[in-house]
Image (cartoon, rainbow, N blue to C red):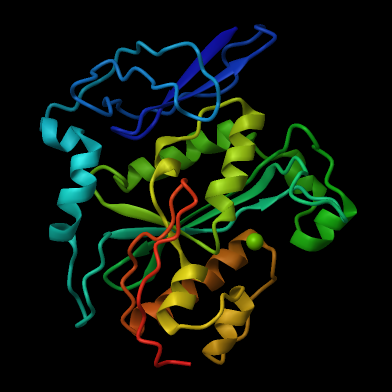
Amino acid sequence: MNYMIHPQPQSLGSIITYENDGRSSNTFNTPNIPYIPNNPNNPNNERDNSNEHDNSNKLNMPGILDASLTPEQLDYSQFLFKGFRELSVIKNGRKPQPFQYYLCFDVEATCEAGTGFDFKHEIIEFPMLLIDSSTFEIVDVFHSYVKPSVNPILSDFCIKLTGIPQTTINTSPSFPEMLCKFQEFLHSHQLFYKNSCAFMTDGPWDIRDFIRKQCFISKISRPSYFTLPWVDVRQLFASFYRIEKLNISGMLAKYGLKFEGREHSGIDDAKNLSIIAKRMWEDGVIFKTNRNLNWEIKKKKGNGKKF
Ligand SMILES: [Mg+2]
């Protein structure tokens, strides 16, 4: 079994891909990202095997340490919980947010008509909008289509639903290849280590389920940033305005807005979700994380005045 190790952005661990046939170990280009261990007390960043994908081989990976970071900064958990409040910026009279940036995203996956959640969904679109929490404007975009491996031919149902043509999929990178590019994007904005950040989704499914299924199919460990708590906008919207949970179109309708673009296009879903988030921000919502991988929902008290 061959291993390829892709360093993730500083302090976030590593992605490993491995091939059962043992024929090739150079499928992907390793991004040029400096490596820093998660925990200064664990300088070799030995992987804990509690992750959902069984990985019995421990890493002992030499890394490039950034001498400008202190041990405290290297300890991601300390930075996460102690540093964020001070880093928040008050601009335009808005309340400070607990994170400097949010990554608003919505994946699309392979699907067949009439199948349930047992289907082997594979991610085929991966759009990420980087939102500056001081303005709630989109300041950068990462967008990639992804070539599935189990079902590389999209069903007619899937093509009609998502609007993604087979020809686009045929020339797209695999999920691990795409993830390497995404991590270069994270690193270009110094997200999750120098600049605080949380993911923002519509419901729990993208991070909880689709990333889990895709990592299992791609035989990679769940990246560390996808183990962190995140903001479920659908849940936050419902609890803030004290109404039932609504889908993206339903939430937009509460503001008198219509969906812009095509529903079930990942990039359009993400853009419309970001429009909702900005309206919520204008109403004074604090975007604290309210979901985690333990399936817990942290309910917030809202003002209940809007609708
Ligand atoms: Mg979608």
